[in-house]
Length: 227
Image 1 (tube, helix red, strand yellow):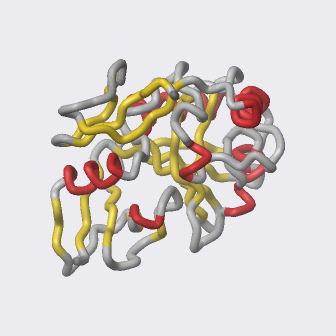
Image 2: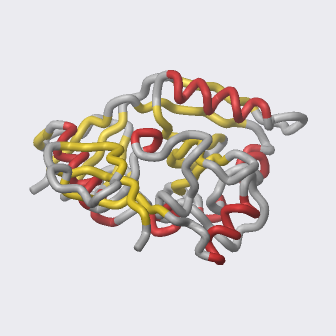
């Protein structure tokens, strides 16, 4: 069945200027060489210590790059942090705290969600002529796939990429070279230093010691110590 879901609390960062690719490439966990008009890139901005700050979808434009990010104060925080790193780069950055984003299933409208083929596609244009379903339909589907949803599941300044299984949902490129937090992120990955992982659990019967993060009905994502 084809349907769409309106995703709440999304913001938008606009990055323009001739240095936009170089600027963003040096900051984020994924490789912008993968970015095209047909393919988004999912990535994160980390602290120098490799801790999660923000996740977002990079979207190609002829003279710009858009970041589909969390909205409200989270969008403003990402905007401030990007401006801190702008320095002498020839880029212009602006922010929209709220932006309409729709997830579409059953029909390839917009661009494929790069995290998992089962997450459908994403578009800024409200789909016409197909059924709308409530946000919970998308949320429970995401949770059962074990996909973190930004700061609902990953704690800013605390969570690591390893903890969130971010390499499994195409948020990290270990071959791209330097970015903020790259050394510690790679070290945790290659040495298997992480002690806990986020995963899908039954909210009514979670494993002992599980720290539940986002939840929808009986489905939840929880931080669990690895056995």
